[in-house]
Image 1 (spheres, rainbow, N blue to C red):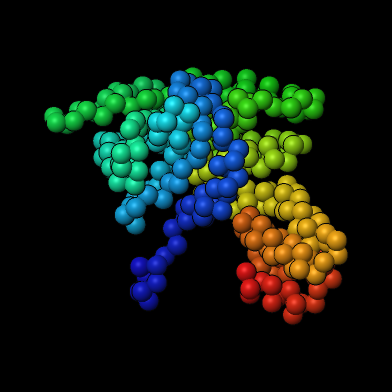
Image 2: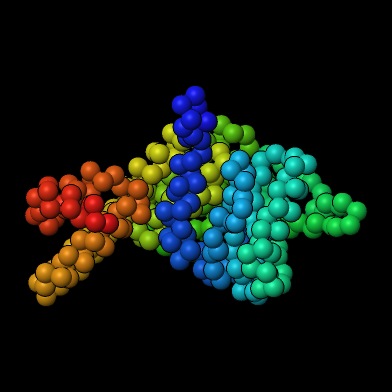
Length: 299
């Protein structure tokens, strides 16, 4: 809190906000993907679960990823670039929160820790007398960063579609570099490379995945730059055309109105500023500024 009693904005707020607004994209695209390319031999992802668990303290980080796997187990995934004893307390807290939320449905919980290239090796069990916490671990230092990047770039240049495994490698690639600066440079490089993906659905998945997976190493400025790239991927334009088509269907006024609402909601989901949305409504639907403002206020 500052002297005026207002909460100061944490530099990572932008990345947590993006976890929320991009959750639908991630949920749909993570289905049926495998974590084996990271060195984790578990069943495929069936569903993405919400990471904002009940009663999490204000100063406590959210779970990086929470998945329901095909075998019915719940996979908690955390990414670490340093080793701290407090991490075990964090994992135990996550598990308790999962049990509180899902209760008896949480018959099997997997605590998966993916270590960036900064970590060589560590113990996979934590003992505290009355309990033992067993971790499933993966070490990204084992991944050939340059080799994978070269393969991805070659396939993109040749117009060859990327496989599901390659998409998963794409979004984790920045974390395979050692050192904070190397990771940040890798984020910029991989985002640049992602702009070459012609399949817009896959492109959006990769860009949003990088933003979510690498949130611990991305500062607010870099996160904002990635958001800007996302805006420029024509995803917003595709949503715009979708809303436009819906609005023009059979020339019905009510369908046109519904299409405009869909457009406003969709563009907001990608953090497009209201003033930019107003401009799009004026341009594509020939609305006056006052009419566009009405739709903004109603949604």
